Length: 268
Image (cartoon, rainbow, N blue to C red):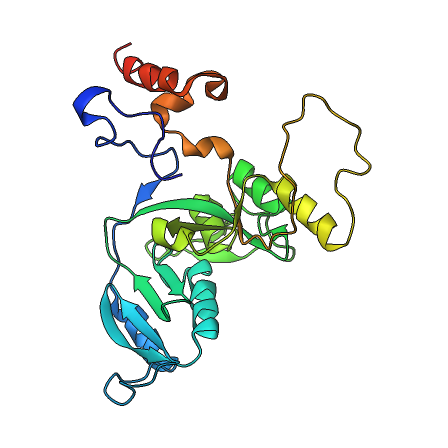
């Protein structure tokens, strides 16, 4: 989902020149000081005192070993909650490697990130009202008397307008989060919200396909299992880059044809 699989030149540069997928973005970086300060408040222990402890988790910030921690599970959960509330930068990457007993935190620039819907308890955190607010570009006004604001220059009072609602508001509301390639390895991403419905039914002991009529045109899926999903793709087509995404029905072509059209579309 970070790099377009079709849009690459033929010949010598094939596979070396890459193009970003539609929703991929490059991190601009943020200061690591607030993250280190938070870690010290939340039980980060000194290296020298616990150099020989084998069951503790090592904490790295931008590749620098900062210390060790006794409860990485709660630390990761708290840091993710802070990131979803926009208390720390949404670009910060939090990777917990259980096998190596490491917690790697990155705040640096140059990492490729992409947005995903957040899933909790097999439910999308994105709700209908979020879509409605995005379409009308502002939140619904709160009930009660209107809030008056004073102009600092003229001293005139005016009614405060509705709060604007943008893409960043979705990130701030905890409906969407940005993951980089390394953190993506530690989560479970489903392709469509339908997969969440299937998993919910299977957790209740029901067969998701029992009552549905046989559809010969339906895409065959392997035997589904009740996964614990943590994220959901915004749309499966977001794997493509700009040139490949304007090809009609690219999933019905041989893959080299998509690569050829991605190159020729730039010359049209």
